[in-house]
Image 1: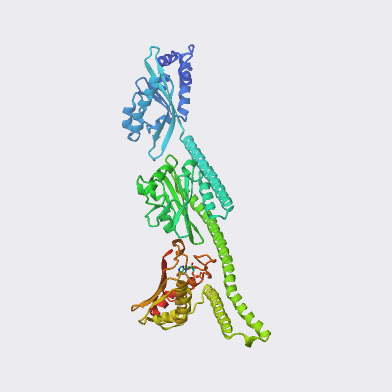
Image 2 (image 1 turned 180 degrees about the horizontal axis):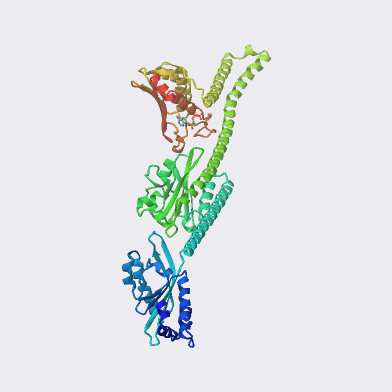
Length: 610
Ligand code: ADP
């Protein structure tokens, strides 16, 4: 620039520029008024030069070929060229003096040519690395100057170090981004807690188990999933689909509650969640049949069409555990096109799982207590009826005798009549005692007090005795009782309790045996004994067999058969206290076979009891 200011012709040429392309170009031409003397021009040019030199911004003047004419100190510093004789040299030549800035220098002609091609001021942002590892950013203006005939005359380059401003802007952007992220997270958290609060409110509005599952599934859609399956544990301990909700109500109808059973032994998916009580995140369901079916806990190929219809690309599944009991699981699924399930979904599902499991546990508890109340009421009515029958007949006998006694006619009563009355009273009082004993046994069992007095007992002899005592009963039913118990079967057992087992099973076989033959067998080997009681009577419906050893369970109507529904319960408790087991095989209308297995040795009893 000094050269340019010292040379008058050049200045004049500058003045001849017409139609300046920018403010910078106008600035450069204004210091040479037509009427200035050469001295004035020189002193004015020097003033300008001093001004440019003092500028903290880098300023470069190049000729039309890109050779450097004038550069201020700030400009030389940009490329580490302080003290170098730069005048008349191009960037390529100058780069030899400053190897570190070679690359930065060689870029300059490229951006210069952009300005030349545009023919007017162009602006570019350039990054120049520094030896200390930092990078300085410059906002660069390039102003091309032309001769009137269009030839290139010179290029003015003005730079401004905007590194600090850029940094401040970047920092501001970063803070802004952070603030936006924090706000979004806070909003998400707010929506989440509102969702969970709503869940608790809605779920606490019902104590019906099925209804709880249905409400839960619908709550999750669409807030937490495109579709949601709630899996619940059924009465047999199996897990099945309790409810399904879908963003598209038409697809919701594709799977009915109870229509899918979770297979407990599948390696992944819902089966895994239920089996191990662990949550699962599947951010991308692999494109295999097994992987798709795992989301429904099944390997039933028919379900693949269902999964496709529901639409599945990712899912989370969490167990529903309350008070240490697994009540089922929830699957929160996303369809293709939705954002995939992520860790945040899993956390939400886990929180939801805690709330929902409690609600389901309460519903289950309520149902169980209702069932217990119903069973108790039924038992009380049956028990009072059962106790009343022998009492009534006992009273009738006693009243007849009392009437005769009060009238002084007792000695005139026929002896066979007195005997019959006394026999009936004796039988009824025994029956009454038997019922009361059963009730006492149950309360003892409930309190956990079934003490066994073990001694050596011959099960075969005991069976023969018990069968003998039931002779009258056999005669009354019109059937027969075949006993196969010739060889001794000895073991360490509680004699009275074992007698109870045999009598109970034989009594039931006669009672429900429809007058057909009953067979009892006592056998054993070195370590075990078996008692098998078989009848060809009414049998037990299949769906009742699993519960027939439970308290108060009856598979017959009390109008046709009396009973408390406690005999088999007590039998099982006694057998199990001995370390044994009881099983049942029965076909309705064809008969029943009860088989008791008992360990012979005391050691086995002790081991099982502990
Ligand atoms: P109870 O006979 O007093 O009702 P139990 O506990 O002895 O009570 O038996 C429970 C139920 O099991 C009976 O009510 C009956 O329905 C069924 N049951 C027991 N033994 C037999 C059998 N041998 N054949 C058919 N049903 C039986």
